[in-house]
Image (cartoon, rainbow over all chains, first blue to last red; front, side, top):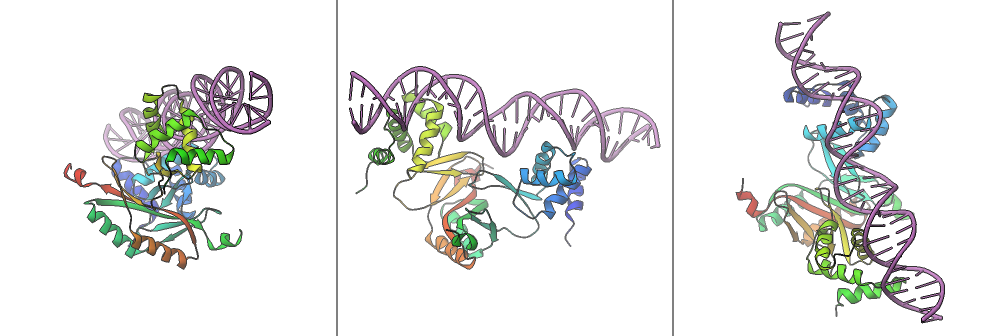
Length: 145
Length: 145
DNA sequence: GTTATATTGAAAATGGTTATCAATATCAAA
DNA sequence: TTTGATATTGATAACCATTTTCAATATAAC
C-alpha cells in the first residue's frame, strides 16, 4: 500500500509543523516524473518551464527538504556534481557510470552486499550505508573510440 | 625495483618539458610522509610549517600535477571534501569511513572486485575504475553512543 | 651568462550551494 | 473569514573550496 509522493510529503510537512506550498508540490512532481539522478541545476531548468516564478534557492531548499524527509538521496559522483535521486521504497542499488556520455545504469547485487558485510565484520565496523560506483564506458560509447 | 617518489616526479617533469622546483619537491615530500587521504587544506597547513612562503595555489597545483603524473589519486567522499591519496605501486583498495570520527580504514577484497566485473559484463560495460565506500561507525565509535 | 618560458605567490575570479531579508503565503485560532 | 504568528519564497548577497590571472621570479637549455 504505497502512498503517492505528494501525500507522503504532505504528511511529513504536517508532522514537522511545516507548511505545504504549491512550489514544493510542483518541484516534487517534476522531480519524481523526471526520473533519477538530477542535479539541482537540471531540476531547476525543468521547473522553470512549468513555473518560471520559482527561484533557484527554493529548488535547493526543497531538495534538502526531500532528503530530510527520506524521499530523496543526495549523491556526490566523481565528476564533482551532486545529484539527487528519488528514493522509492525499493531497495538499495549501485551505479555504473559512463565517463563518456554520462549515462547512469543502476544495479543490485546481493552477493556484493554480503561480502561488504564480511569486510565490515572483520574490521569491527558497523555499516550504515555504502556507495559502489563503477566508472567506465557503456556499451554504446565503447564503439565510439 | 621501485623508485623514490622524488625521482619519479623529476622524471615525469623532464618527460613533460616541465621544470623541477623546490616547492614541488617540498610538497611531494610532505604529502608522501603525511600518509594518506589529505585534503588540499590539510596539506597546505603542513607545508606552511616547513616553508611558510609556499602559497595556497601552489599546493593545489602540485596536487593536480601529481594526480596527472599518476602519483596521487583524487577522491570525493560524501562529506563534500576532496582528498588526495598518495598512490604507490600497490593495488587498488576501498574504504571504510567512520561517520563519527572520520577515520578511514582501507581494505581490499578480490571477490568483490570479481563480482563487479560480472555486473559490468552483464551490462556490456567496460570498467575503468571504481569506488566502494562503506559508511558507518568504527569499533571505537560504536561504544560512544 | 643569456634567454625563452615554466612557475610562483597574491589576489581576484569562479561556480555550486547556502544564508539573508523583506514581502508573502499558510494554517490555526478566534 | 479575519486575524495573527510564523513558515516560505524569490532575489540577491555571501560562502567556500578550488581555479585563474598576472607580474615577478626561477629554471633549464643554449
